[in-house]
Image (tube, rainbow, N blue to C red; front, side, top):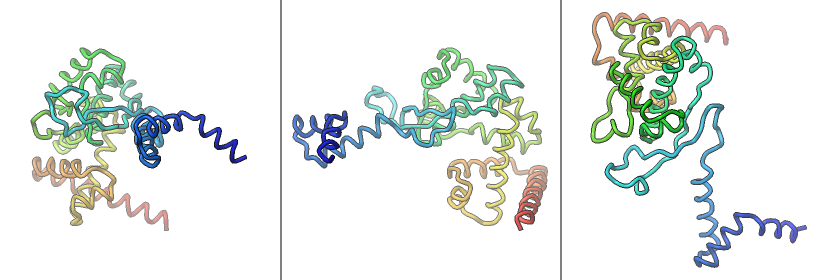
Length: 264
């Protein structure tokens, strides 16, 4: 039985690869095994945990320099949510296919930066199955609306601009409703509500005296986003903004108390 299993293992592609490393490249068995493991990780990627509508892509590392050949550029693997299901279809139903694509562009760029990647317009065109010209037109439209798009080109040699999440929070602080924000930014109302809930939780924990790193860990979001939320509030703080935030934080606290009572 053991001999049969041994023969089966010897006929695998993995064993053939290790034999080449050991015989042709004079690598020790343990070294060959380690090389095989690294090669599988690079070629097969992190397929586990992928949700419907998601795919893994290889993008330039956000910290990689510019002006060098793409083959020499450091790369990272990023999980992209190309199709978010109901969230995207809500935008499609309300504003059409073009608006849904522009909504997806914003999400994909945010996901790339959040995973230390930097996507080009060509990367976006490839996964969204449209031409680069279409992506350029979409980006120009969104930027004209005041939405910062962290493409690889925009990240080159400049500081971090205001992301679409901060823009949404800023519009809400200025007095716009969820409906108005959704129409102006081509987001679904549900996604606007989700961003605002995250912002309110950040402000709630900040008022409780927690540090940025603690808030990020508790809410499972990046520290840069926490800092961005705090900064956008500081930039727009007025008596009106303080009053609106206080009212929403009170509502958030009341909902939390109600949930605790139901649990008890």
